[in-house]
Amino acid sequence: MTNWTTWIAKRYLKAKRNTRFLSMSTALSMGGIALGVAAIIVVLAVMSGFEKELRKKLVSSDLHVLITPDASFPGFDLGLVQTADIDSLPLIASMKSDPSVELFSPVLSNEVILRTGNKVSGVMIKGIDTERMQRLEKTLVERALPQMMVDREGPDSTRYPGLYVGKELAYEMGLIPGDFVTLISPSQMDGPFSNIPRVKRFIVEGIYHFGVPDQESHQIYTSIQNMESFLRKKGVISQIEVTLKDSLQSESFVSKYRAQATDLKMRDWNEMNSNLFASMKLERIAMFLILLFTVMIASLNIVSTLTLVVQEKLKEIAILKTLGANSKNISGIFIRKGILIGGMGVFWGTLVALVICLVLRNFQFISLPDVYYDRTLPVSFDLLYFVGVPLVSFAIVLIASYYPAKRAALLTPLEGMRDY
Image (cartoon, rainbow, N blue to C red; front, side):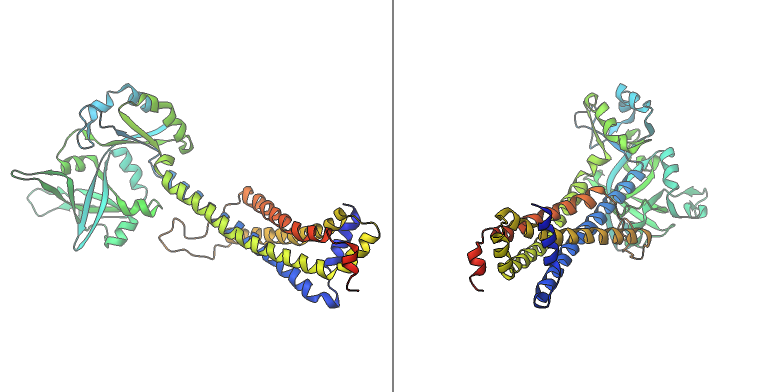
């Protein structure tokens, strides 16, 4: 294709008195492409931003690697093992001394029913050690006064067992620091004649906020001593939670020790949330495919526009062929016109998407409900979206331009001059 084909393609874009409709159709096709490209990029950038913010929230907690005993572990009983037995393992000693480990926390956890008044909720309670408790206290948004935690009715004042609830759970249950709650453990039961669930009264000592609503709705914390008293078991743990200095090294940390952990299960935070990340990835793919149909529909407009141009330019095509233009030259004219329409649409769509993303990032005027991980729309400037989406859209435009261009190339001079 020579340069004169591009010149003619540009000439066909300009409006004349008898081609106002074609010019409007061209503008609509260009606008449809731009709208589709902008919508795809903005949606993918926002969804990717949500995932990145979620990952930041998840790694901000102390749980980077979870170690749980297998059923084959010696002394395994209802998910519990003796602390001394697990501490005696050479593997545990190696992990404790690993320079990448920041915190190595034994945890005694159990599923319980939390009841306050007429409200009940199923939660996971975790008994944690002193060092982990100190880190948890840094995330508190509300805390009970010291005098609230002491029972002064008896001759000797005793301290109530306290627990920490998440901000979301406190909102759902209407809890504030100082409120009494009852914990019921149906999985740990005993009784003189028949099994009965264990029940213990706690007081809400504080409300923590991690920024992950799902965790704040289903996890509560207390000291490991309170958990031992509640379950009536001493010197046992249910799991070990490892905090790394660099959360991104969690996968390599697990790979390093997993082969030696014959009676232990090791999972990093990515693996524990793999279903969530997989569903978010599937949603991005689905949204990309759905919005891609917008570009395809706009490309069909290009097909119809070019087909109408071919019908309107039959005489010019016949003259060009008479002057010596071959089929390749004729098809090149209309392919280049389709490229000009689609290319300008892709360019403006990408530019509009970039402006929208910059506005969303710098001017956070959209407020989200509390159930989301972030109060504003997070945006991720991923090069894949700003380059890949325009390339895919441009390929669709190129394919759409082929049919009318091929049809124009097959016309003979006689067909073009028949009606004149």
